[in-house]
Image (cartoon, rainbow, N blue to C red; front, side):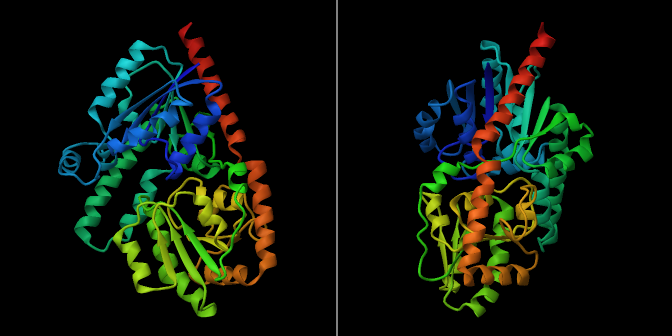
Length: 404
């Protein structure tokens, strides 16, 4: 069975949630399906990672998009297009031609698009199309726009978000099958398209075995960890809230404690935090994310916007790191407050729970043990891939019925 997969990133190295997800699914699906991968890259140097993906794909082709998002071309095109900036930013003209050519040359059973903004690359076709919504994009941008003080910029952003929403909803309706990360996301989308049978949940997973290979090495100073790539606005928001609202309360109660912020592509504003406060350390790309989880007493995730399941929560549980988080950060995972995680929704609640975990080694052990058992039985990639597996097979069978 042949699948053509389109992704807005090369699924290696594993720097973002999307890359982790796609790479692990490719790895698990490789034995059963013949996958051709068409991916966008920002830099020519990324080509060095193609051999790693060729282990699992029949063919890998990459297309270069602009390295920086805010180029004159991207802004100019967005101003005169019905498409939002997000689509223009990920638009590479030669991809569409290449996809057309590929579909003429080979017989594919399913086309799989990761993110709605890869959908414009697919020509009109009878082949069933799966759209995977890793997050509901327009919601993540909406909460960011609401916080912008400068009125003209806020209006420009709101106009663009209206475009994102229009196209995102259009592709929800036009794809054959829609995959979400959680039941919450499924319900949210169904309120718009009213087609519950069309939507399936294939949540994110975690490579539990890989995470348990590293032993925990806790530093002598009590250490609070924050993890998340900074190209995603809800993560920037979460770190800002942690540093400005939660951390001062924790530090007051535990003056020698440390805050460790780990994430790909930190902005100058993020680096400012460690300049102003010596108890804060910023680490950009970390070669092995397990070192972050195993080197901290607790992960704190004050997430207030965006949808989808958050890798950092699953990974922390797999690594045996206790978690303090907002309700939204663990939404859709099925965890319970006081069992696998501790949940608080205000700065004071989050700070008090963080202090409680730091002061009680027994509580750390309990949360770590329960979290690890939970991801092992619910979120190992083996289970997740099986679900996607059956969706592929069902869709291919339906498509063959229509073609016969």
